[in-house]
Length: 132
Image 1 (cartoon, rainbow, N blue to C red):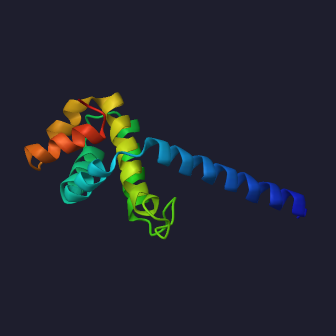
Image 2: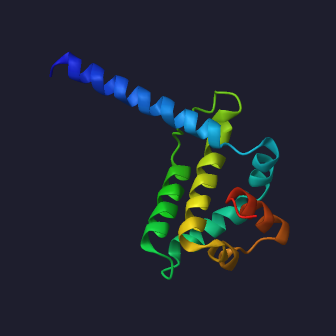
């Protein structure tokens, strides 16, 4: 195998990684939203599970949520946890981006229909999903 192909692939993957990290940094919620997201994590996991299993939602929405669940279950993150702030925030940012995608495609009522937590928790989920 020619080394120039290997080097090109490694450099390409490095560029993609840098772009993803930059996108996560730009899209990150403020510190208060991150704290709120961690507080409602158990209810949020249940919400994701119920949305992923809801056959009345478009298949693309369910696939995105299943991919998110798989990503959250993986021990490898886009940003290693040793990097301050972003190392721990990348999961919350990815969840936020998927929630926004779900709301755009399925509507905010899909989140509300499957939410089993408190009203305050739903308000946090709505903020994370970009619903005001």
